[in-house]
Length: 106
Image 1 (cartoon, rainbow, N blue to C red):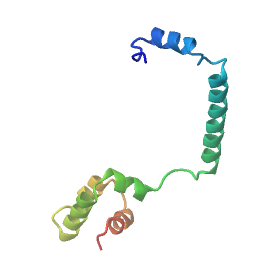
Image 2 (cartoon, helix red, strand yellow):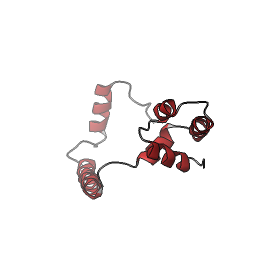
Image 3 (cartoon, helix red, strand yellow):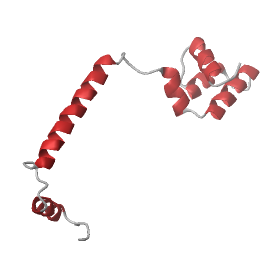
């Protein structure tokens, strides 16, 4: 077995030597798979509603422990709500409370 090629030109030459160029069976299968994937992507894109879920995104951006600590500190008076909103990426109190509920603080 040959070692893997190091240069792009060598890779292309080996692909052509081995019969894996676009005009062969590989090329046909590749084109079919590409068409299938693009159709799937277009179908998925059409069925999506506009935008993601803020609470799911925020829970991925922030650690649960950090969010709980900020919420607890704001409720105890150690951190102003203005600063807590900035730290958690919220603007309204209702969003802050919904996020607090989502991360498990009551």
